[in-house]
Amino acid sequence: ILNVEQSPQSLHVQEGDSTNFTCSFPSSNFYALHWYRWETAKSPEALFVMTLNGDEKKKGRISATLNTKEGYSYLYIKGSQPEDSATYLCALGAYNQGGKLIFGQGTELSVKP
Amino acid sequence: SQTIHQWPATLVQPVGSPLSLECTVEGTSNPNLYWYRQAAGRGLQLLFYSVGIGQISSEVPQNLSASRPQDRQFILSSKKLLLSDSGFYLCAGRMTTDTQYFGPGTRLTVL
Image (cartoon, rainbow over all chains, first blue to last red; front, top):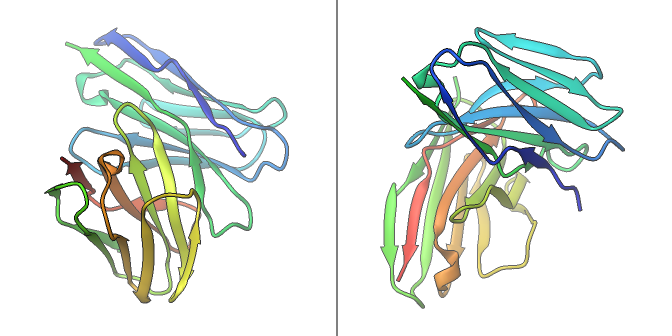
């Protein structure tokens, strides 16, 4: 059974702080790693899909890195804003299994003005 | 662009009653479809996925079932709800890329 772990479980920061979260996953048979942002009362929104070791993706103030050999991905937010408050989910893509995703528990970020 | 529709948005049901949640997809054909549940204080758990009409894969043994009677319709059902079925249910679709797109979700409370 594939297990995806995220840390920390929750994070409270001040506006303007930069922050980062970790997603850990089994490094064997890696296929793809996804990051989603889930705001309260909305649907999860895709941020990044990464497939190659060393991949770095960026979207505005949010960026992510991937290390498939050691089985982790980092998500960084530079200069956090209150609108960044959400739960950030990472998910491991399972190859040849209907495209299913194995999600971590998520990191709940709260940014105070 | 593709859109995932789900209804109802919220549902309160007594223990032992049946359940039917519907998910429909707009803007694409032959998508892979998924049902997830988020129980209180937990992450997203995959319940079922479907790669085509009538094709259902179940991920965890439980009190629920799924059906895909049409290409763009995915239904989650139960004959008799348990208290433990309470949670937030999300339908998702995967089109041509690996990214999954989610519907607005249904908040189910079983009393």
